[in-house]
Image (cartoon, rainbow, N blue to C red; front, side, top):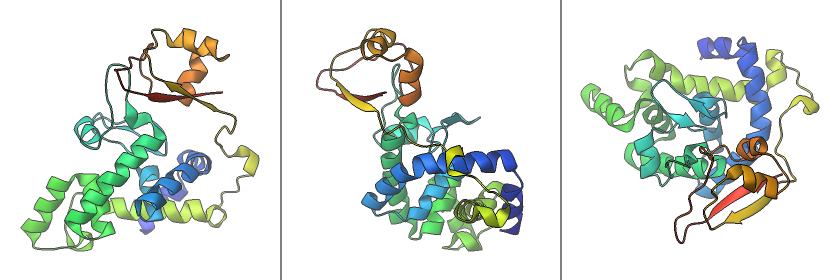
Length: 232
């Protein structure tokens, strides 16, 4: 834990971004965690995974919760030529909650869930069985996984008490959600997202910024399907 506190407290650029992004995304994530019966502290897992940004890892995990493609589709997220819902904050968080609950049913404690989230449930179960243990705290695992839970705890301490670690961030420097977005229900295929953006008085760039899960220049809508696009 001391190692993780030291690494994260003195990793100034990343920690500052974490503080700014948490102000923007935590309200959304907290609400979904609460509605799903998941401990609120799992919002810090998302910070550990991606810094609450839509990253792509070297292993091709994507989005706020760093889902691999197979796990994402198993949790109901759409990944297609036009759409990657791993980069949809609300939908990916709901999928993460379903996955976390699945892990909890299998492994019995929230700390075990964190370990399994990091290394994968199959590998985590194999390690528990091989070492005849039932707790994350009692197993010998790779360095990344052994540090993972303590990284989450360290991030929690720093984000909750930034001034204790020398971070003084004024409110105007924190990121926030745009409160003036309109939700547009889309039930038919959009052949040009640029034309769609201009129709609603915005730009292609801003449409993609507020809807990062749109990964093409068009949006194919299957019969009976509906998407909600955010437009400033």
